Image (cartoon, rainbow, N blue to C red; front, side, top):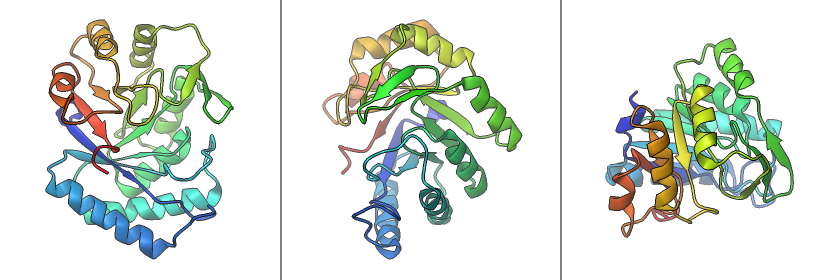
Length: 236
C-alpha cells in the first residue's frame, strides 16, 4: 500500500465499547459501523481508520475487554470493505493496535505519541520509546503494517523541548512511515504554516496528513501541502 496515495481517510468512531457506561450493545455497533463504512465508500474515500473515540475517559492502554472487542470489530470491518484499513487504540496502545492490525489484515496503525513527551487532556503523561515500538512490530511479524504517527498531537501539552519540525525529523529518523499534523483539538484544523514547516523540513519523501479540521473550506489548500487528510468531524 502506498500511503502517499491516500488523499482522504475517513474516520469511524465506534460507540462506547464493552465496559463503558453508555455501551449500546454489539448489534447496534455492528449496524452503525456497516452504515458508516458504506457511506464513506459511497463518498469515495481512499481508506478508513477505526477508533475507540467514545470510550471516555480515554486511558493510556486498552482494558482487556476493549482489546477483545476492538479485535472482533476490526475483523468484521475487514469483511465489509476492501478499502485500506487502519486502527488507532486510544490513548496510545500501540501494542494492541499493531496486534489487531496484524490479525485482522489491516494495512496501517495510527500512533498518537511516538517521539514526543506529552501530558494528555486527561492529566496523565505519555513518553514512548520508538525503538521499542519498532522491535515489537518486528517481533509479531507485522513489519508490513505501516505506522502513521502524530507529532505535537492534539488534546495534549508538549513536555519536551522539541519544536514541531524537530519532532517531525525525529519521528522519520525513528522509522515512522507517515506523519500527522493536527490542530489543538478535534475539529480544529492545523495551521497551514505548521503543515508547510513539516513539508519543508522533510521534503517529499514522507507522506504527511492533516489530522483534524479539514472541510470544504480548506481542503484544497490543505492538499496543496499535505499528501492527504484524515476526516471524521466534518463527515459526521
